[in-house]
Length: 210
View 1 (tube, rainbow, N blue to C red):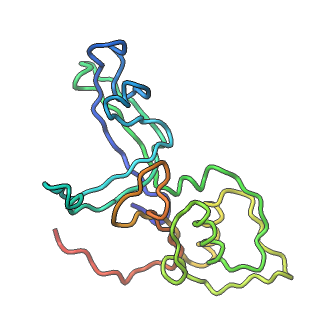
View 2 (view 1 turned 180 degrees about the horizontal axis):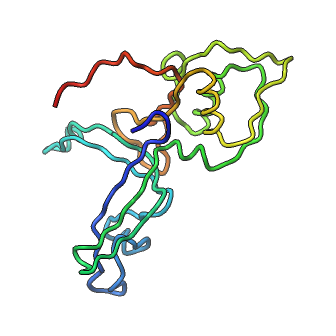
């Protein structure tokens, strides 16, 4: 988990050859099609959304999922199969994942920002991707007001690069993080991810000793 760059996750999945049927000999964790869907297996494709939760699973799930916390909500950015000498159980699949801010790196934008504060720019960019961003809470105003008469701010790069420039200019940090609570299903996390653009928060309560 990082505030100076994207948070990451590394997930290792067991992998073995399919024993019978028309797909016999293929590796189960690498299957994308009917085999995977019929067995409820995820399709580990690039940019597939992946959510990691830690906690205690409830015995009676009708009352809720139990005491769990979402620690990562992002996307698969690399899929690396590792084939062991003994095939099974030495083979596995490694998923390298970045948090949802990786969506802000996929497109280069050319735009002129005028008569708007850095905080308003940050809130608009977070909203562009569906991330929650609350003025005065997760987004802090640095006090700079851009005059429409004066030359504005020219953006020639990704939204993530622009946010990084604005954060450095204000002495801020910017990052995204998942919120506790139910996870929205689907390819996009939506407001289950909060965008942060504010001064470093050094007064947070200390975590208890393990």
